[in-house]
Every structure is written in structure tokens, then in C-alpha cells.
Length: 74
View: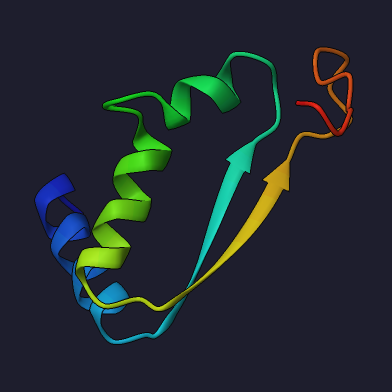
């Protein structure tokens, strides 16, 4: 499947739902990069909001990575 076809199908799917899930990486560096201006995570959330998604379920992946160093502050 071409990248454009995949994108169009994804947009169609997102626009038909009111709830969306977003999987993000907890790895140090990847997490922060996703939320910086132009970051992919940030763009996906903005796109979902634009398409009318009212609820977002955030799933944090890779919590077992040694760089995570889990804490409330982070």
C-alpha cells in the first residue's frame, strides 16, 4: 500500500471515531522529541482534534527501558 493511500485511510478512520488511542515511547529523548514543535506525537494529537476526536487514550510504551528512570517529575 502506498504511503498516501495509508494516510487517506487513516484520516477516514480517525474522522469516524470520537475516541482515539495514542501510543508514545517513554524512552528519554523520544518522549520529548514527540512533543516538540513539529514532533510526530504532537502532530497526531492536533490532527485527531481537528478531525473531531473528543477523547484521547494515551498508552506509554517502553517503560522498562533503562533510560526512562520513572519519576513523577518527568
